[in-house]
Length: 385
Ligand code: PLP
Ligand code: COI
Image 1 (cartoon, rainbow, N blue to C red):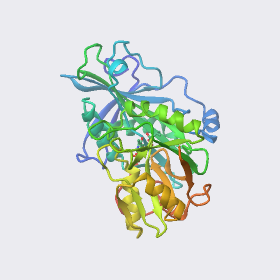
Image 2: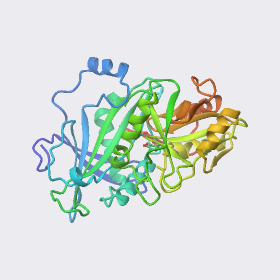
Image 3: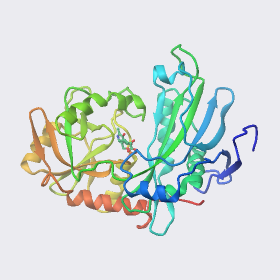
Image 4: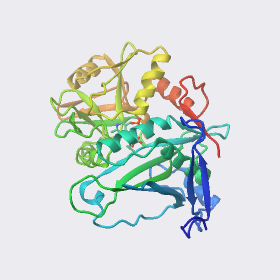
């Protein structure tokens, strides 16, 4: 037992390592280990083909916040349902944000995170936009370190798999008035995953009836509401035989913004790559930013420019646009085979296989994430257990 929490069996002073500004920082996480851990045989079975988001590790992190008290009660507990009051503000007004990142196990057995400070920073930015309490970067990173210390056996060794980390925060003040809540709950889950898309090349539906976010809205924040509003267009996409939806700008419905859960890039026949600029409505994807920098370092012309949807349809038909791909933590680099809208469709390449530029960028990114390539950008964080 430790502190005043009877279920707590140990204190884990997580040394929030070299990637912090203050390398001496320690955060105490109370550890309550599950009494029914998954057996190694069952885990091996689950890791054979975990798909995306269905398999979870044995534990989770929970940290509480209360105005006046700050962040407190950090613990690693068995993964279990949360108990929240039905009057909790998140259930009514949707103050919820989340992140998506991955832990990789390299062929050398080392565990690596990719640009985790960027996720911590975006989590704080999302919190500010939703008027929520900000979780300090050291606690965000410390939570990841604490969970990996307990659940590292769940990090797959297969090169096409990783441990997806899902930090989230909800407001849980018990109050029905509409205001910024005074209490929050941070939770971190981990889920071993394979590819997000099962098919090789993704068919994508252009949403002409619905938009995702307007400038001045919450498009730049990673909040659940953005995804809730994407589900009807996503259903529309599915009814058209597509597995993702591409959104256009909310003002003119002319320029490409991004997809439901990933950014988008197009390759011209001269090998240059173009992606929509950060316009205040799209998510500042960490994969997007990494590919822009990596691509430039590989001699590829990478530009951020407004892309009119009509130009993409005309360019794909004329051979000006030869590849298109989605990019994001879950999607990594996923080629788009077909772009479809009410008035017709276009194909990129043979519509079934990734093009050479997408393949080169994907290989450069994933070999960096797995510690197989030199980390000249200083993006990779080794996790010491
Ligand atoms: N855009 C949206 C709407 C997303 O949900 C994601 C996924 O996180 C991305 C873009 C890509 O962001 P990142 O590369 O940081 O995962
Ligand atoms: C991610 O890539 O981490 C996301 O949050 C996107 C979602 C499609 C899972």
